[in-house]
Length: 392
Ligand code: F3S
Image (cartoon, rainbow, N blue to C red; front, side):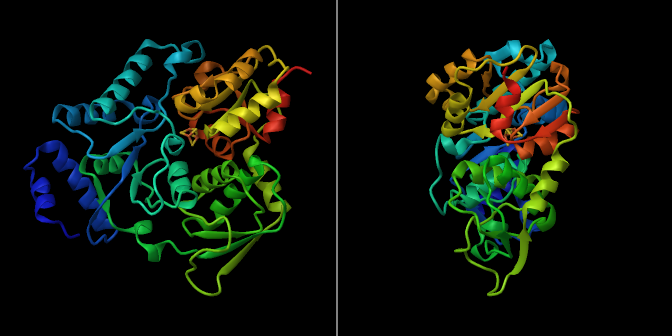
């Protein structure tokens, strides 16, 4: 990969160890994927924030970067952590976890990374169409490419951090227009009624397509929230970082290979994500973190109802959306639910909170929770989640 004079000097260590290691990460990645050069980015979004997922070795690395004077070059934001410090009564209360998690957040912050602790940074600031980004967190990446029309590869935590420090990313993958063309036409031969069905479609398609780019036919007037669930699920079972919700997209050839999806495919996807028929002890809404509309929807559905004793209802969103939806948050909390920020069911310590059976409308959470959280899952629509959470 070509480096200009300034980039070479950083590579040689003229600006210190932190920037040298960041440049080396980018060059390694660029060489691996045959990038021609580094390109400027508008922003970086960094994953690897929860102490549960990164552990002590990563903290040592972050400590070393901070000590060496690392500072972000571009606007940068951080993914959810393992704890919501404003809802400690709902969190695992081990002092070591609290202290370690707080240290991670502090380290990112001292590098100039905004600790918004959400996987939906685009609700705070929508990047412009066509801008290059270095975003980590697969659901965030696929949303950026497919719905916001900005351009980002699926970064890992370290490469997004390196890009944040340098302000650039290697030019390969979906940063190049020739790699953004659809490979497969997915014909959806059933009407999708809710976000869970969009998630089920994503799970099914991701399993089959792996890293191919689909163009969907038959999604009638999908809402952004529904597409968010589709993308998050597709990026869980597959490696795609881009899809086209309709057929008006650049294609890799005139006649695309076709994949048809019908009701039975969706039924199988639902079944694969439900591992029990026991009663849930937690109902979880908010993966990816809820939008304004989604918090409102939950409030409207739960108004004048009461969450059952012994059942937790968590609605996860960013602090930003929580503030903007205060009146709806009050309705949800009056019913006995909790509107949690800064974390999510997957990156916190669920089992240690006494959760054994998790019900969710998120295909992504239902996919990861059995392995990442060792809980049993029930995957269903928001309506059924609210019904199961509340007393008759
Ligand atoms: Fe976001 Fe957590 Fe889901 S980070 S995409 S809410 S697993």
